[in-house]
Image (cartoon, rainbow, N blue to C red; front, top):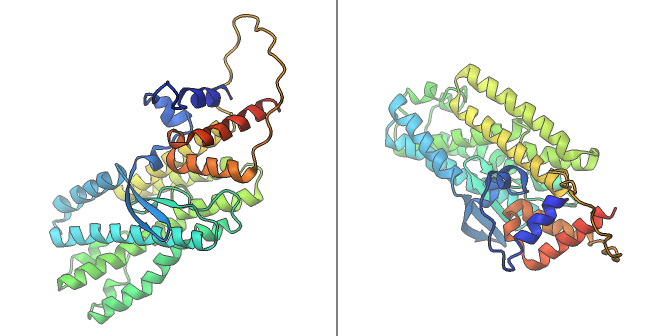
Length: 335
């Protein structure tokens, strides 16, 4: 646990200043750039909604570059697709966050990326964690018939609603007609993609990966490690599948899923003290004075601190929260 103690002492905000950013912080010090590189968007019912600083603009830029020159869809199609993706991601995460809070199992923050959320919404020790993580999927499922009915109401051909989702050009090569039809069709298509990816691929940060983690917490002695193994396999299978079919977008999702799974595993190892071992002593240490073992931290208090680390990173802990973590670290070292 030397690394944990070192980080607590060095980043305590008392004279030492902020720690410099290093690669070690990214992959081995409990930090998670997939959640703490974000900015606030809005509040809704006590739920803070944030947007990832890099993933959202980078993803949207790649989408624009990939669609415009190759398929020459034109700005109406491109911006309808991108706009639908952002609005659907927002609705997805509002549903996920508010359902978790309604159940009494949810946190107070979600971080958006174009396919949903990057952080878990269920609290540690939640009563219904699997249900709490499924709110986004419920939103997408409900939107399928709603958007289909809107499209049919606009006199859109039924063939535009039943097609191979990996080949949208089979629909787009035909003129959809009015701008309203274009906007509704893209919302329908993007909702299908968001639902399919989050439902069928069991890896982080997708919903099925979060639901799997919640299930494993109640059925496995090593839930994070087991979930990570499944996530790495899912990411590898999705990557090979996307390469075979030439689906660059799915390839990007697979890479992000592998990185998110690695981050989650490394953060878990760090919090349990399984990171770097203590450095060997180069001289005979003096006999330490006998100290009273620190009292164990209440589970609910520790769970709240760990949940905040997961959402916002260690550097956002208050002095009191760092003290809670330090006491629990010292207690575990003493056995």
